[in-house]
Image 1: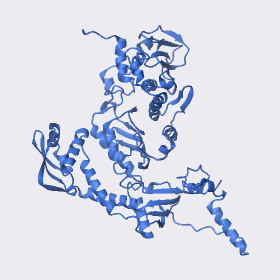
Image 2: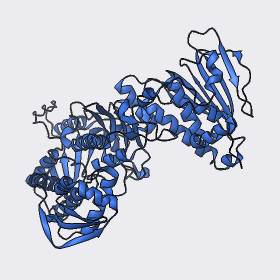
Image 3: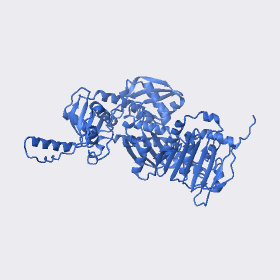
Length: 596
């Protein structure tokens, strides 16, 4: 076939293949346009999972009448005008491809009234891609875009769509992501004329926390650590789920760069490293995090759907994320618990759900409408009456010193669990798991202070690697020395290992080196040696910790509780399992149906 220019409608359909994957892609693109227009209220109507109808109305700045038809042209945008603008883009959209791409695979109508305009105007796109004449319409300030019969002219694409519920779930997730960052926007989402989501603006921290609970569930909101850190030209804030909130899938990981939801291998690696000591195997952390940095140091124009970014200095970003998150996780210790004075164990507050349904529902005790303190007074009065003694009010209990965060030990249950009384209720501690974490953290501290000792190999190990890996070995001797690895280049594709960490004398050195090189090629650095050393220390800590079946004295139990309060990450053992749980006064009252 001879070379010829493609018709504009076909060009738009090709572009749509990159940008418009499913109905959720349409919602994402249109929602970003509404946010860029400064909308404060957005209404979204969906029918049949977005295949039949997607309508998005906003109260943003609107589009001037003489720009409506231009808005449907390819590469027409108000957001950039030069390369400098592109390098400093601060809007969610900027390419001017969304509307023409959508119009090429659906029936689209655009109606808008610009700020200060006397009336609104609308334009429609015919099935062949031509535009209808511009005509007046009734519409408040803002824009409404109606998309019908998605992929009506591309039947092959329609066959790849899933069920109605599946497609709507993708739409919900797209809306969910934007609401997690667009705090000042109120939004209504309806599916088949039924309201599925209704949220108002979230201006305060409490309102943002409530929005978090609405979008991700109360369990997520209640098990998060607030993150707020600043560095040179960078800031990170948001919420980080505690290790106990980890999930079997990475479905609650939301990361935003300058307000844009992105996926990035640098970010994923930094988060994984920060959680490496506290997550059970196969579990994934949960988080909603916002990274802010100058637009000029991050390239957002590297993915058709703008879902990925590229950092100018990825190592600097990685180190900032890792150190901030690592510090936030390490700071979660029992001594950071809210005091009992702030959370009194009364039944005046809504009671949380019982930790487990362990009682037979057909043999419940009758309800006792008194709290424990009231019952003690009643027992005292009955005792005095039975012995013909004057009934007097029981003396007020003497003031007792404030209990430590994990309380004071009462018993060693089954020679496994420590039972302690805290200011808020009762605490149960897995003695072995807790001692294992305390021992492990002490070993890590000692190890870090002494550094990694290097030991020469009896027989040097020669490895065949790629030329790029051999180049990296030759160019990074200081980094290898810091990891106690003596690696030398011996040819275009050969390296020789002469020394390795002394604590890893019996390790698989070839596998260790190859893992280090793979990490370094991808991330510019590697923590494989440190991870291997820490794995060995974790094994030593496990074998050196108190075992189930050994009876502990009260002094030993209290000493372990105090050590936990002073130890980082003491909420989980080295394998990611929880080390302690607490039953508050409210939970105890609910178990025994007091105060009802």
